[in-house]
Structures are given as C-alpha cells and as structure tokens.
Image: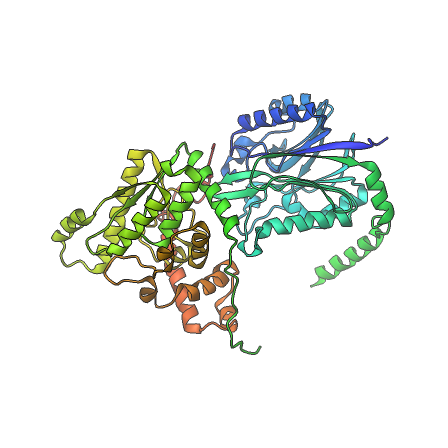
Length: 287
Length: 281
C-alpha cells in the first residue's frame, strides 16, 4: 500500500572538489537534519560526494557500493531514504557517474549515467563508462525514476521509466550556469526549468530536480533546485547560487487526480513505438 | 541563397544584475578557497580595470582591495586621474608606482628598441610589480583582460594577460561596458576611447582598424555561435573584415595556452595529467 504523503527534500549543497571525507560528513549532517524534520526521502545532486570536475581524480575517488565509506549513510537510511551522487567503481574496475538509492540499510537501486556529455565544456566520456541499463527503482515510497543530468535531455530515458511505472522522476544534476542571451536568467537555467515542467506534465509525475551550487575552476553551478507536481505546478524552489534545503510534500491523491484528468500514460502506445523503432533502425542499417 | 544587405545583429545585451552576482560570487569563492582574502589590481584608468576593481570591492570589501597605478612618463595624465577616481569612488587602498626609472634604465642599453618592445616591457614590468605586491600583501592578482582582446591576441603575453583569476575573460568589450554602467563605473571612464596607453595618442580602435562594436558582433557569431567564414559572409559581414578577424584569432592561439611541452613520457602535463585547479578546495 503506497504512502499517502511523501515528504521529499533536496540538499542543495556545494561539495568540496575531490574531498570525499568532508563531503561524506556534509551529507551525514544534512541527512540527520532531514530525518529530524520528518523527511522521507532526501536527494543530493549529481556527484555530490566528489564534486563535478574531478578529471583524473576519478579512480582515487571511486567507491564500490560495498565500500565501508558508505556504511554510515546506509545506517541512516533505516529511517530515511537517501539518494546520493558518486563515482562508482564496478567489480571489474570501471568507473561510473552514478546515483544510488539507500533505503532500509542497504543499496536499493543504482543508476549509472547513460548519456555522458562530451562536447563543449564537458568531457565525461573520457573519464566514465556509460551505463547500459534503464530501470525504475522500487522504493518503499513508490516507483521512482532515477536519472542524472544529461540523461534527462534524452526524452526516451524518462519515457521508458514512465512505462514501467514512475510516481516521482528524480534528476540529480550538476548544471553549470551559462548563456548570456536569456535576459534575467542564464540560458541553461531557462532550458532546465522548461524541461522539468514539460516532463512533469507529459509523464504525469512529480519531478524532483536536485542541482548543486558553488564554483569549480571558474564554472558556477546555479542551484535553483525544484519540486513540481504532476500538473507542472511548482511545489518548492531552491535559491539560485546559494546553498539551500528544499522540502515539499508529495500527495498520492494529487497524482491520482492528475492522471484521471489527463490520461496521457493510459493512452501511450508502447507496441507502436517498438514496432516503428525496429523499422526505423532497420532502415538506417541499410544506409 | 540571396545576399543579405543588412548584417545580422547578434544579441550582445547582458543582464547587468545577473552578471554582477555571478562575477562577484566568482571572485569571492575563488579567492577565499585558495586561502586568500585580498586582491591586487593594476588600475590603468580604463574601463576594464575599473570594472575589475568595482567587482573586487563588492566581493571582498574595499578594505581588502589594492589598486596599483603604474604610469610611465608618456602615460596620459588623464589615465592616472581616472585611476585615482576609481580608487576614491570605491575607497580601496592604492599606490602610485612610476615605472619610468626602471624602463628607461633598461632601454638605455638598447636604445634601438621600437615602440612595440617598449610597450611590452612596460606591460611586463607592471606584471612583476603586481606579483611582488601579491606576495607582500598576501593578495591574489585579479585580471582585467576581456574576451575580445583575449580572442584577438591584443594583450601582452605574461604582461597584462597574467593574473591569478580573471572575472572579465568571458565578456566581450561591449558587455564589459554594459556591466560597468550597471555597477556605476564613472561616466568619464565609460565614455573615453579605449587605449593601452603605451605610446602617445594610441587608441585600440585605431590600432586594430575597426571598432569594438563591429568586431564583437563578428566574434560573438564566430566564437560563441560557431559561424564559419562562409556563414558570416552570408550574414552580411564584409569578407575582408571577417578573414582578418579569423586570422587574428587563429594566429594568437599560442597566447591562450601554456607553453608547448614536447611530449615524450607516458603522462604529460596538461595533456594526459589533468586535474582541476580547484583540487581539494
């Protein structure tokens, strides 16, 4: 039986670049604070345990999901579900940009970032292996979609999870602010806010967008984390450029009402998608 | 495709308040995380160094900013007056250090040196003074080079181009003026013709042969929007001008990189040894 209400929080933090132990302490403090406020799920940004521009630091910052460094967070997750971003090391020593869901003392779900931006200011494919699975996460709070930053720029990613079942779309992000042509807001801010709104509406789900703040090597991250309802309404908004703690209550009844009023999921045709995708790919191979 | 008679006018407008917040935050964050609290800036009387000083004063507090005014005997008196105006307006620390003795002493030995050599020597002398004061004051040297001059290579390597952090390096000159206006840089400084003031009567635009207004439009399209030369011509810009700008960008690329190191080992600095400058901070 799904919980009627889920209290979700975003830790809009400024991780210290390359300092695992200080970042772990920062997370543990914030989780404890969230737990005391009755938060059910706390979400941290992309690579929250390491910082973003880690470059050649990747192997020295990598943690396997069994790492004792995660023990304290696992213990804390008995009372509060935790989503963190980290550099994950697989048993065969590949390194991933990953998000993990810790719940009831264990790692409940791992998402390895699939779409690694390697253009313009980004160079992720140089340092990370690409994830090759896309699956929803079963949480005690309901079905969750867990994605990381660039993943969300490929609509197929949240689309697939929405077919499987997604009450809450959670995006971990380290979005740098850039683009001066947008007036009061930077262009990257405007694009993300549009994306979040559009996905909430099109996939009839709650959207939780966790972005970080701070500067690394002259690049700044714009914060502005947000939580949206399935109707696209803003339930909570984090400050721009400053650390913040963003909370909202997600109401199952609201999800139900929105899906009744706007049955987009009901009307979706995955068989058609599959069929046409096969055809298009088949034709492409002949080129 | 028909020829466009009126050039495409790209949007060089910036939101002053947004930019102010971002650049003040940048200085505050990147200075403090390196363990410093102060900045030292070469204030020339021009709009770029004035803007750097205004940003630094907001980020760190006026009591933590030092302006070094370093004239040569041929510097226009107006430049020094404008530099002092910046200092008075912001109530920051300052010192006037005349570089004439040391420059003249050096060129007594090399009297045949041309204006370019002399200009570069002055720029580098100012750099050494700034870095010496950086040590003396435990302050970081704040840069003043804007994106236009960095792209065109219009600056002295290891001279005015040298700094610890540079808040203006991603702003075109036209954008520098807008931000300066927003932040209250005095009118007189805003209005005058930009000059490196390395010899009498020198102005940037005369030396370059085009205005900042013209070149910033081409640069925004060429660099930010990745227009090819053909695209720029079709957008209505004159071919000769476009090729000249492209040539300047291309031939000055060496100024925007670390010195070229011959790669012979398995792991070389800045090539396959890649770490963030803010490592651990």
